[in-house]
Image 1 (cartoon, rainbow, N blue to C red):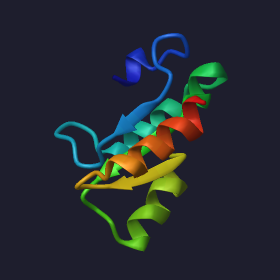
Image 2 (tube, rainbow, N blue to C red):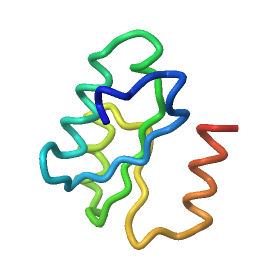
Image 3 (tube, rainbow, N blue to C red):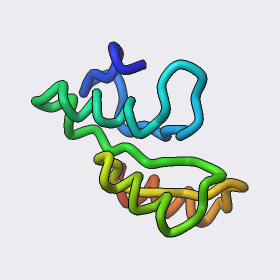
Image 4 (spheres, helix red, strand yellow):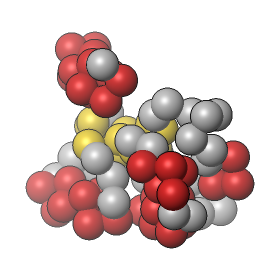
Length: 85
């Protein structure tokens, strides 16, 4: 997915934190390191990790938002509206 993080391929990324090959924090950092328009894609964490420290870690990694699982539709809609207009 990091290889396909192209500004005209994705409008927004909903990033899980716990993934098998690379965690969401590291994937976000790699996307941000790509530079240019690719680095500007909004990334929102979607994770069961819902503590304040988890939110801070998401923002520190370069994510733009954090949605805790189980996902509440109004919270998801707010993120979609905020980042996609």
